[in-house]
Image 1: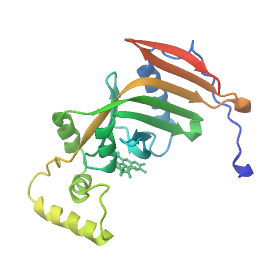
Image 2 (image 1 turned 135 degrees about the vertical axis):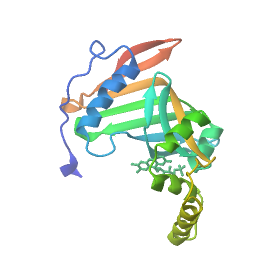
Image 3 (image 1 turned 180 degrees about the vertical axis):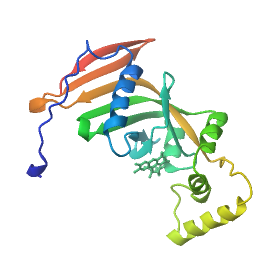
Amino acid sequence: MEMLRREYNGIPLNKESVDPNPILQFSNWFKIAVKEIEHDPNAMILGSANRDRQPSTRTVLLKGFDEAGFIFYTNYESRKAKDLAENNKVSLTFYWPDLMRQIHIQGSVEKISEEMSDQYFKSRPAGSKLGAWASKQSSVIESRSDLEESLRSFEKKYSHSEIPRPPSWGGYIVNPHRFEFWQGRLNRLHDRIVYRKEGEDWVIERLSP
Ligand SMILES: Cc1cc2nc3c(=O)[nH]c(=O)nc-3n(C[C@H](O)[C@H](O)[C@H](O)COP(=O)(O)O)c2cc1C
């Protein structure tokens, strides 16, 4: 494991230099990640905890963000959807190793409107649309061939018509109340700048690494 050790020497991050608005600060970093990161710069780890306080994490893709929050799409009957129905408090973590940067977001999640989900579903390639019909996400299946057979049956069903959005598929938006921007620095003295919401305002603080 020692060979995995590396020194971090990222660009300094200060309370004074960050944008007072964490969404704009996120946007600044995200733009750089999109430019610099070869694969999946929009991949984020979604953390949930169910009614029994059992945490779970999995990767999802960020598909939009603005002042209202961070949007991802998934199956509304999946394991994560059950967690979110039981407890709407979630976390999102982006890790961009090449930039020595991590962003951790905490907030509450809710479903987006059906219209918004329809709009996004329409923009997906046919294969992804059919995949959403074919997969009952997180359910136990006998074999891979069952899944492929299911895909073929939906291919046939929708071969001459537009593929509608499955009712069990759609988006969620995470409304943030805390952000932490982490920048790797020398000698493990990393920069950590936190924004926490107080009323309508964002309070900015530095944390010890
Ligand atoms: C890079 C990457 C991106 C992913 N993006 C999504 C996504 O946007 N939506 C989704 O439902 N699952 C996505 N997945 C799969 C999830 O990580 C997970 O396996 C799936 O959603 C089932 O999770 P659950 O059983 O906790 O509900 C992605 C996986 C990876 C590795």
